Image (cartoon, rainbow, N blue to C red):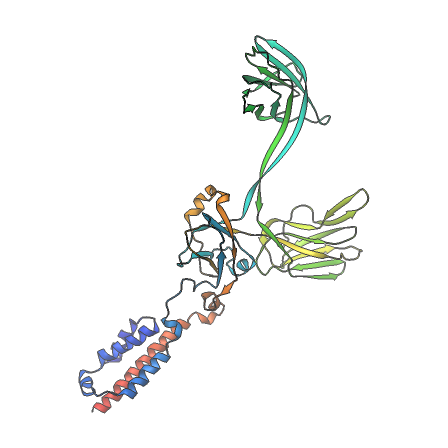
Length: 460
């Protein structure tokens, strides 16, 4: 047996402490001289017990346990679900933002089997805003030309010297059942006419159609309705005109909290320092202060860099008999993570504002996932080495009906003290595994050599 041979054997040793001990025993049996083994068949229980005890003491309890599916994640939350649903959702809270990666790449949803459940992140919803302006009209002409009934209407403007903008016509139709093809024309002076739309109107026992939707917004002062082949001489006595505007706005999910902050008054300047240690995406900061005032302010981060805001950088509160105006909110141009936020108010020669009820509105995200029949689900996060997963559900999330999604709640946050995230805070913790394995190898080899020498001496 030579040292070179022992080193060659040790180089191929596994990393598990238990396997190291087994490999050490294998080396001992392989290199222990055959004649020594024959001569030393007499059992020596004391020596054997000492060797085994030393090796077992070197094995930490965690070395023999299988790695749990959540061991790399620092935090775990149950997702409470109360009713059956095709899809489920849950809003993130302050703790998730505080302990997860800044971009939330380390979020995972696991079922009761510990398998990853695909999800997508939803940050808001579309909201339809509708604005209608209604105009009336007066009939100026009603004649029959070659079996066609021609009715002209003049629009009554709401204000003088303001254009009338119309994109929907509501026609007063007869009460009896009918069906008529019609043509709509428009004119600025009631003399020169332009074709606008061809459509049809009807009434049955249960249904009717009296609305004509134009293809664009028109500014005509006169409109003409021509009912084709109106041999029944049906009349259309009224015309209502609409400017019907629909706008889809994106609304972000948001919540409000009272953040930690400090106020300092110095040299006509009031400084508000607002903490955001939980890495929340700040949307709006607002407060209440009584009295009449107009004050300019600045908003910066802790490095003095100006943060873009919506509107003028000015606080005011004006309450008089005929005037009541208030603006004490700071709306960021784009919700972002800033910590801290520093607001400086220029008081001039006035007394500082008595700031009360300061609140911070921040945007929140919602996770949506398909219910695979599992009895329980959990959210894990806090893994600095995790990368963002890619799931197919992202490709068809726009097809998921909102009514099929049921909202759940996050349970209490449970910390995994043995997770990798904790060890990474200590730069010296990285090589501990390799140092431990090296010590195991060294001690095992030393015990083997000592045991071999002792047995060799007794055998002689």
